[in-house]
Length: 305
Image (cartoon, rainbow, N blue to C red; front, top):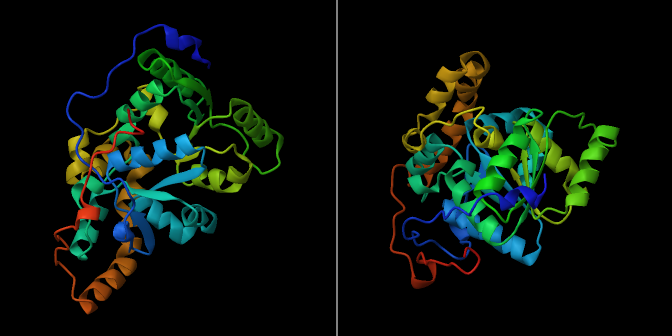
């Protein structure tokens, strides 16, 4: 898909209210450890600022996200776990994980829960204003193309190219080489990879050295949502930690094991974290403190205009 489709409709303005102040610089305590993995305590606005700065600098970056399912997979799949060791930013896509880390006395808050659905409108608005080149790899044949057409009509100025995720990703294989060649020709500034866990993370980790210098994000069913072949849970369900229930009811056969069996495997790491928190005297103790001047939230619109 090329930008010709972008001429059909006027741009949509995302911002309807004043942007919430957010931090402009990464903090020492931003990356925390829980359940045997590392995550970053960042707001959706901070994720967008990080992406925009990387694009402006032409700097390659890897943005990941963790939830209970991905944490479980890190214990079972070394190739999947390796993807996170080189991630530059790791979002928390799990309200229960936010609650757990808060109980451990870490400075997590509900607004630190963020993923594609929390910043997508902001992203596409910024991408349209700055004429970003975006490539989406994933989805069933035809789904990504439909999502691309819809986004191009809504956000003129964005150059969106897509490729479905149904290919043999064997390293060195002809189909994988063809995908890499298509991405290289497009020279995207943003590469979304949405092929589901763990496939998308394993593919990124194996192929990123051969990708153009761009921001790579694992986004699961993002374009399925944009094409409306799947429907996300209402965001309020995510904020209170029951989004998993919405998804389970919608697809119980596929998701029963993920939501009803996998979490039991995390009891061991959770108990280890609790013992550590007790030993350090921070279990159930709020880390809320008065930030110093250099750590106060400040709005920064230089890269988000």
